[in-house]
Length: 308
Image (cartoon, rainbow, N blue to C red; front, side, top):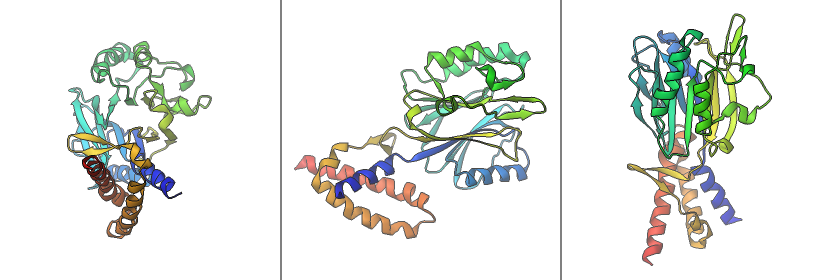
């Protein structure tokens, strides 16, 4: 029983759920609307927000968030907002502002805002075939593409009409991406953009097949600061990793069968738990303190064992 407890503790330390939101914020220029966005992210406990139609150069969401803003004056900008414990590294700020991509651990993450309107079909197809495709990291089985696609791939996802993109469909099929909404709601129709007599599910999050089983929850939530709904998924990261310098440390899971390791770990765990009172909340304790202590303990124990 004692060693089962160690297993479950380590499982939850390194496989915590990350809540990701994709939101078209519709040129959020006023301070009041920015406050509403910050309040929404806090109330829904979003860890990583992928924003589209960012029409402001400075997005102030408070000290607990890091903002990567690909601003453009014409309102086509994108931004990725992460809590400070989330290890996201931006890599591509596309000149048009329509794409911001980077690495979420070993996941290739792409946030996009596609050209809108039926008159922009040719431009939109080129956007998917050239711009988006160029941001995909080769030979990476972990990929997330999210944002406002301004088209749908199924007739039931738009009313009235069917504004689709064969090029997007080829991209999705070519990389074997799965629509996160359909992975858990294959027969349920919901919309993320409703205006007058029109409705569509243009805001989506596509994930690689290896990530699909790790989706634990999906929500479509109305917002007071935009005419788009927010689309949220909870994702358990599938790799037992924590940040270390420029790379990531992979836990040696064979330690769980080591009696000496388990006994020492439980003693350390009891001490680490007592340190929670020095942090503002359990999230700060977990990410700012606990993850690093557990990783360091495991590395040191493994090193000592190899020397013996």
